[in-house]
Image (cartoon, rainbow, N blue to C red; front, side):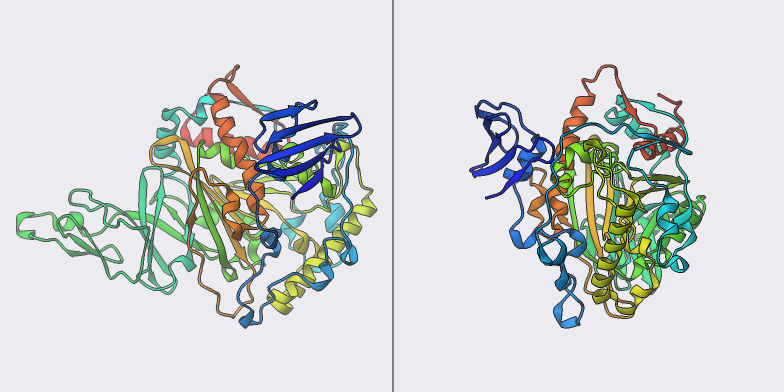
Length: 552
């Protein structure tokens, strides 16, 4: 049974079984019993932390699967690739000791003034880390760049998240104009392999047509519009034949057969090529853009994004995990839950037991690419008055770099010597507008959020784990998408490790937010100056693409 103290109140949360949790505040001499999802049952203590109740008493992972996602076993032991933590990791603390749990009362973060504006009181300037990197000669210049997004709090009308008119505008002006990740190249490993990519009510057949060539065709017959492909994936297709009347096109989209062509005089040229989308390959991903006049993917992503990921060779990684779930909310709402660290203090309270609350996260906006938290040491919790000294932060920063280096040595060998301390520590969460979120460094995580069908009240959230893999060694087959049921907890997907428990907390908030917006008064959302600046940048771009005025 699980039993943990709360990191702020110190109250002990104890799992009782049958979905019940006992909460005892010894300092106040009170106790209460609750269901794991928040219903009060009995006792003198009548209120408890909803997310902590779920973390202690809700659906969870088997102990052997409760592993931080960055250290999940990789590959097959027969390959010689390391599949577990270095022996020095032990029980989680130094020299195998259990880590000390940090409990401190809430005091609030007063913030502080910096040359760039107000920041958390735990914030350290970027050059503190880059200047103290023991391998500065290995550090790419992009890590020294800073691009905080200007402006103050922004108000966005709630209708943007559930009114059908915005969905229709998105389909007309957003999804038909932007570069968007369709799949991994490893998902279609052989010539003729294909996968369906759906965005809202648009669908494309993404097919490998050469060793390093991919095409994307609209999944509709040019005769009567019947879908050419019904299934999500296919192997070694030589052509795409309509199951209705038999019209067919080669894998490259050129016309193969127009049945009873005698009855369609003058039509051949018009249907000689399936319409499609532009395609780009980057980092082992396949991107498409339905706009034939769009600029290149490289220009869209921008030099900072390309430089930031260049050394990590994302194309060498293999897709270890791919899990998806339909979320009862608008796609923008669930994505925004992952575009700031402001929510950690309340949504993920268990993380505070080990010190930090990520209030010192840094946020940069480089054109269409947004970067969160690439240089940090952790350990401070300003909401609880815990501010680590710069020397202590630097000590932690270097300890993390050394540990990660030892771990990665077993995965990628001598390649690890190419990386600076900053790159070894990095757990950057990034977002390429509008919906593609590959984490930087060695975090493995990739998110994608997209609308489904014509319903603004639902969306599809997907998470991939891309594991480090040595260059030149054959990769295991890419994991296939595993779809969870709408009501299945994320911990059903044990292959996600502790990330699944984090997701259950995050996605527990979002459907309730979606419904709350429909009754909210005044009818707008407020985003902060700095900690939610990337969300502000998203909505500024969104307004421009959709032709909206600010606040519309």
